[in-house]
Image (cartoon, rainbow, N blue to C red; front, side):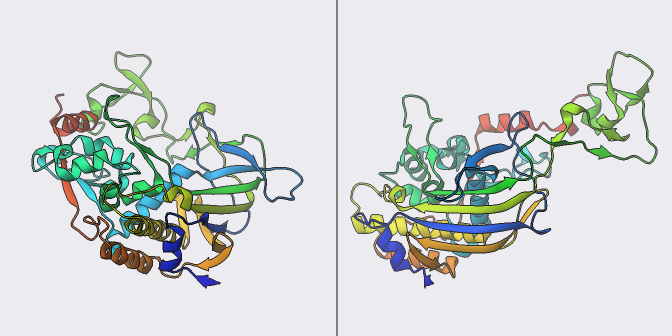
Amino acid sequence: MTPLTLSMLRVACDEDATEGAIVLDAVLEPVGGHGTPVNPAIYAGGRYQHDRRWESSDAPEPTPVIVIDNVPSQANRLEAALEATADEVGVPRLVLDLTGEDFAHLPPHLPRNLSSLRWPHRNADAYLRDALVDDEAFVKSSVGRSIIDATADSSGALVAWFPQALLYGFWQSHLGSKRTQAKHARAWVSEIVGWGPATDELVTTAAMKGDPFNIIKEVGLAEHDRNDLIAGWELQEGKSPTEDKKMSAIGHGQVITKRQDETLAPVSFQRITQKATLSFPQLRRVRLGDGYSDEQDAAARTLIAALGLHAHESAFGRAFALRSGTDLVVKEGGSRLDSTEVGINDSAHLVQEALESARAVGVPTEGWGAEPIHLTPNSDLTKAINATWPDLDRAEV
């Protein structure tokens, strides 16, 4: 097997290169062993993502599959892995700072510093549009304006501050119909698929919460009670002016779920695979813009490619958890650059090499290794957050 080198990546990123993709294949297995049921992602309407796919070119017919983790979900996990290793490789970040007094009441499960690696729409996110830096609109600053105006053909600001957007795609769709609607398709595609599910039927399972006292009855809750940690509830004997609820509504009693509350059962698969591809044709669409050379464009693409490989190795290069009941280990794995088998030995070092090479030829890399830019919500966003998560301790009762 040939170790993947920076020069190999660099050649594939040249303007006139012919390389198609780096493909990473893995056979996965539940931590409990082959055939252990796992939980695929559930979508609107209580459905798994069913499909039929050709397992090989000589297969007699397509094989039923269920997508355990789809492409957008995988991208989110890859960005989370980049955030976890950001200090190691110097990944650029903007941070929406919610540590101020306006947000001191927010529940503890909400982030106080929301990294741009977690923004739903990446560089096209409304968090960026509705943020301030030094009490001024960030989009009116030089960095903010350059990020907003960036496209795949003029991507210098994204290489410098949002390289993940050039890997996983973006659509600048929240600025109004008369402003930029720039789009860029993802260059990195990854998904986890379960082949040969044990059943094609829709199987559900009912949950049970036990209670040693088997407390029953109904409880009345005034509208304000929930603002005081459910204080003041009382048992109800029949109907009352207050809202009648089961004891389970305030955490008491044992409950067997109703039919409409049943959840899809875990699924046992004949085989589970993950396939990830880094498309060089798509990546070669990335250009820094006017005034930059083909050499600089290729160096920028190489940095983006190295970052994508690092994200994958960080997220999936060892045993990993997708969701409750879906913990997977890698049983077999391999990667290839077109038809050449390659080994990815130290992805973090590859990123560092690519970064040094990019800087040497003048690629914009201001955000790499720099302190994150700290933003704060503007007044409208502050109101929206606080309307969603009100200060219950100050709420009128």
